[in-house]
Image (cartoon, rainbow, N blue to C red):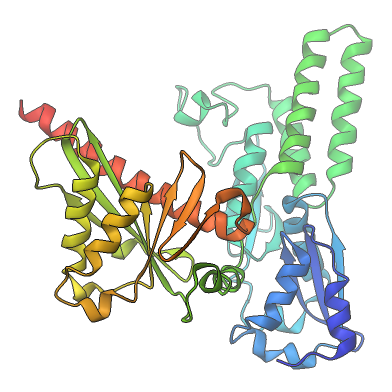
Length: 415
């Protein structure tokens, strides 16, 4: 899409902070969104437009923004502004049944839950929120500061949430509990300063009356709340941003074609016993768990990770029906990289496999080794690509360890 010069300049003036952005058609707001990084998110609407974006991109004449101190504030502010302005292109694919609300049920012991519809006139509804996952994460973190009930009744014994300090317990101080629910509601309505002011006033009152233990508890709550509001990550990076980052990867690896599929491999064993290999798959920068594979090593029980990797790769490369990736990432150094390169030429489909680019992550030396290119220190990788490589490697390790532990447990039960 060709951008007007004025609009392009408008985008590059946006800050790289969390906040809310507003798209205008003349004087009317037509779309509102939130972001971890305002400039990158807005830029991405134009560089990698979805079919929804294409409904309104040509109508935009102005872009405005409100930056926030945290992702939670961005989430709350987005909800407030959508409720106030009812932007045309937010409403096109969202009706009341698709938005999310935080319901606060009153009564002797108020409780909180997320819902799609406002059905009870006696219930307080906070919202609408666009993104359910971000809202769930926000409540999860706020619950650490203000424990709350999620149902009308509580068992006579402490529940799992009680042991995690996320539930008020069997017999809480109801006055204190209701005050906490009020503060949590204020935060979700964008009244963060009000909630903090009330807490600081409570702390001062306790200190003045020499109730130092209570004052200390309120002080800890204030610090925990400020930590949550400032440093909690609840907004997911848009997949389109990930695709944009992936567009930089072929050049880094010396490839001419685009990268859509990456596979990563790891080996897990204890002195050769219960040895397994894992293969995880990322499509367009996101895990494709339905394509993950696990391999029970067939070779003799001896600690030889190189030979085990060779076995796993040769078994995988024999399955052309799984579809080959553009890139294979190996956990290990130069020896592992060379084993993978050699394995490509020993398949029944060498013409298909030779185009696969092999790379390996040497965590000891903190380097990325690339087939046919000089190695790159991990610290010199663009942050987004480093994050992707690390995510792949961590996921392969997690998947291998999980399978290895399962085999060990089975072996112990059989003996």
